[in-house]
Image (spheres, one colour):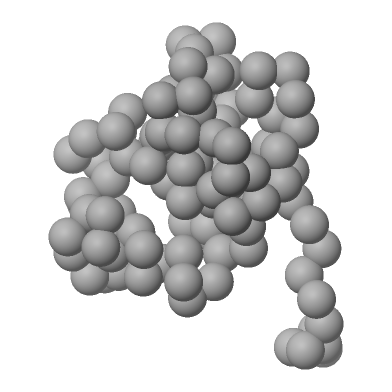
Length: 98
């Protein structure tokens, strides 16, 4: 059985040739996404599918901003290209357990 009180191991994502630590998928993250997408967690998947590029950038920003305050949504968007978008999307799904 997992130790529920154990600190989660840090996770990283590579953007622009640099590794960035992501925040854990916790209640604060999901509450922020609910506010960003103006919907409940149960409708979040549908909201994300409606505007995939905007959603990807917003989710990345939420995941990265706590540990990397120098990043902006625009700077994150510049590091995601057609070459890495699919991989980044897959990694986000793993982080969020979607």
